[in-house]
Amino acid sequence: MMRSPTGSTRVAGVAGAPIAHSLSPTLHNAWIAAAGIDAVYVAFAPPVTGFAVFVEGMRGGAVRGINVTAPFKETALAAADRASARARSAGAANLLLFERDGEIVADNTDGEGLLAAFAQQAPAFDVASGPIVILGAGGAARGAATALLAAGAACVRIVNRSRPRGEALVELLGENSAYFAQGEAAAALSGAVALINATPVGVADAGIRDLSLEVAPARLVVMDMVYKPLRTGLLCKAQDAGLTTVDGLAMLIGQAAPSFTQLFGVAPPALDVRAVALAALKERR
Image 1 (cartoon, helix red, strand yellow):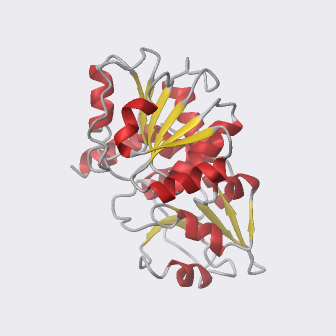
Image 2 (image 1 turned 60 degrees about the vertical axis):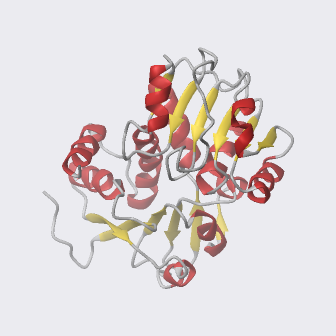
């Protein structure tokens, strides 16, 4: 049972737009209860155009920190006074910490979460064995791409609706990356070892309608960062093609664990938090 907040309760949360769908409060509050610490994790819904003002208002540590989701990850990095190397490399932050001296510190645990998800659900995957295709060029895609390259990926191929945004990400990533237009998604998959949807919507909704997995390499691993629904259209298509899949819930949990440690000063306790999340998803249907 969640404790009633007191003057000494450590407060943290998640900010995004929209945010009502987020499972982050479910995960973190389950860990808080299991650990028996005096803390609470809540959802914040700042206005889309007012995130910087929202963050400024948290200086001083009354709120220990926030996870950041779409569409604020790049703005979050810009709002910070100091950033970790992985946040700077990604050009985006999914975690902001508010120090008592007023400093705002940015980090990015998305890449760590992605690699943890692959290790759990696709243990045979070798990140260095071939090109990896990422759909999208936002903060989530940036975090994924930089983490994959740091882990030894030979090449990251970015497929994105906006050419300027896609090419800007490729410029940030460097020579081991390439941009493909939406209509070139099938070509981007040639020889690929992984396909990752890093857009906040389904592949069809993102406008990538010509994507076929029927002739994809048998070793291709397909991941969708979307976790509601858990089995997205892309993952169902991959399963029908006999391919290994990785779901967005595994990544959500993977990035939440190191965030929890930074927010609350302790590691997440042993708990089947995936079962907790699945129960919450079932209740929301």
